[in-house]
Amino acid sequence: MDGLTAVVTGASRGIGEAVVDELVAAGAHVVACARDPGDLDGLVERHDDAVTPVRADVRDEFDVERLVEAASRAGGYGGIDLVVANAGVYHGDPGDTPVQDEPYSAFDDHLRTNARGVFATFREAVPHLNEEARLLVPTGSVASDAKPGIGSYAVSKAAAEAVARAFAVDTPFVAGCVDPGQVETDLSGAGGRDPSEVGPLFAWAATDCPAEELDGGVVGLREWKQATR
Image (cartoon, rainbow, N blue to C red):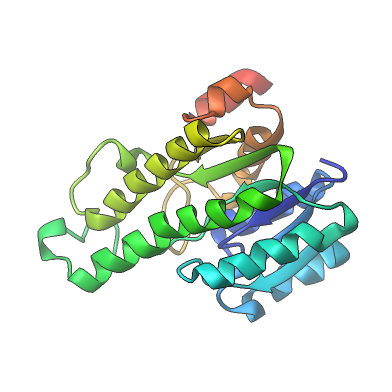
């Protein structure tokens, strides 16, 4: 990935942080986004000039517009080669948020952050994308296989997948979803893989995964392991 510029939202912890680490290790310059810029200090300390921290809230399209404009100039390469729309929220505890009991405010913010945030990130990035750029959205089985107590978070992930499919058919860029399985993060709770274990999956999806397999689809651990074994 030498000479490539990537944007990663929700980069301050969990999967986002692991993806930044992996992309930098592969040679990319990464523009890392979080709502609190102080949360990105650790990434900057580890990677120095290879990471450009930018404060942005994906719920605000004007923030996102400034983010991608900064990214298009970062690293000295020009344009953006990869966008990982990772920013997300979960209001509640996994398995304990039945949809019929959720407040409207939680439903609205799940959709605004997890789905509309993906739309805003991709939409604002499009004018700055280089020819072979890729657009990635982390997803999970709850997007298509309903499980009790996941509520509108699952609804928002299904919507995020739909956003990726729409960009796949309406733009010349490869857009798809990456399912890392159960990962232990602040958002998903205890249990599952360490985020560092799935960073290479995203790097593979960003570079070596066949475009026809990723575009408009979902790739995950099985496809990655089959391709790299």
